[in-house]
Length: 163
Image (cartoon, rainbow, N blue to C red):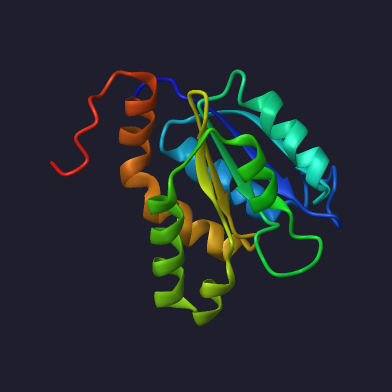
């Protein structure tokens, strides 16, 4: 596996700056590191639209993959999908559609996720739900295609999606 550089960004008003108690972010980081990804950044910030946009723009300058956790639901403070849409150049709806479909097969509340996936330059950004259990399920579900997707983005793999 190439040395993909990864960031894990958790959006939580109540846990802002608290990496110790960021269970969903810690779960994402552990899964990615177990698979050989280099998690270079891990932060918890408030679910503020402008702050998320700023962080995604900054991180996408030198990371290959950004996994977000939280802020994808229905509350007024859930801004992650809107921030992601404001940043990305292209949407990758298949990832988010697959995540919702898989989540619903486990828990019907999965249909309430508004997560988005997309590309900013050569960085893949994927929104995951905020619960550690959902992060575990969703991230493990998409792991088999992550390396391929990143290889396409970086030009080391030709895009032959139906092989």
